Image (cartoon, rainbow, N blue to C red; front, side, top):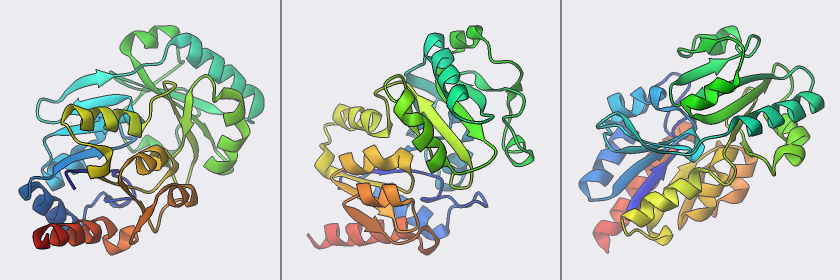
Length: 268
């Protein structure tokens, strides 16, 4: 075990915004043992405070499902993959023709742009955003993720409806357990692709990577890592993609696995 790659929400971070003391201590012990740690998330850079404040991580975070690599120490984007406006417009047209009343938003390197109707009272309170009509000039700020939401149904149903029609244009996944919201990014980009590049730059093979995740946006990463652990509390598709299973989030599953693997290293 030379590298731990962990998702954040639902894997180590709860709905209350807290990371357990046991999990914090497990990551600290891994770092002290010389294990590289990288967090791999669907979150944008502006939502990384839990990692910085609770774990004290100051290294790289792979954000926006692999579209952005961000250095917490310098607070700068080190690499990004962006969507062009023609793709955004084409995907929007197709989704709008297939799904009843979809609403859209764009995550760019400069902020979160949302059209009227996208946000609910709950999501509106979750962070800063720029309301208004989505326009082609937003591509100038680097669009790293396109989001579509339905205020009814499930994300699995929504994805099943539109993915066959847009899958050749854009990468489609989801990670919000209680919302019918799709996350779409540059074709060919996902958590595994960017993580593999990060590991290769450090001379680390996939066989030496331990990865944790819980949702469909973690599937490629869990399959790529030599030891990919889906949380027992995770989405069925994530569980099916992973060779290994960690105990539930509520049982500090990530911490349990890290503790066990560190103990095995000490005995080796």
